[in-house]
Image 1 (cartoon, rainbow, N blue to C red):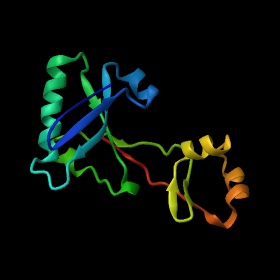
Image 2 (image 1 turned 90 degrees about the vertical axis):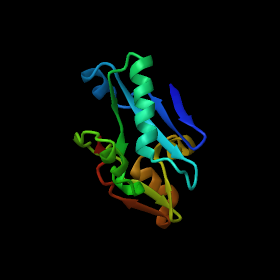
Image 3 (image 1 turned 120 degrees about the vertical axis):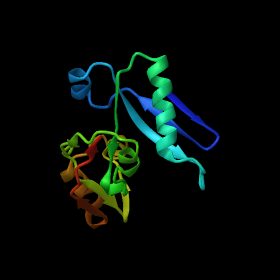
Image 4 (image 1 turned 60 degrees about the vertical axis):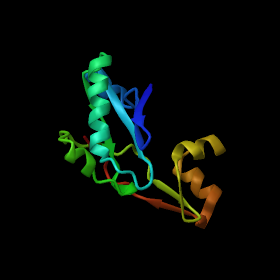
Length: 141
């Protein structure tokens, strides 16, 4: 929907990916990505704070949700530093992590390639090259 930032980084906001969450919390938007230039001098929490102040003054959104993915090595530290409220762990989405030839492949990519993301079909297509890993829950912040 929009991105805010400066020469050292930016925050990207999108529609909330959870339609259920969005229906229970009208006026919510999702902080989808935060990117900092390598060796940036700004604290990411400061960039986030500036973005949220701008959003509060210039949009009708009243709350922001984001997720920290432990599998990707994200522990939510920058959100805690910015005084975000931890809301709990979200339920797993039902898919395991698909590791093919030691590389993580998203279910959406597999669907685009094969017209399915069913575990049985992936086992038939990839055989011993496929490893299935149970996903940890994401932190809802």
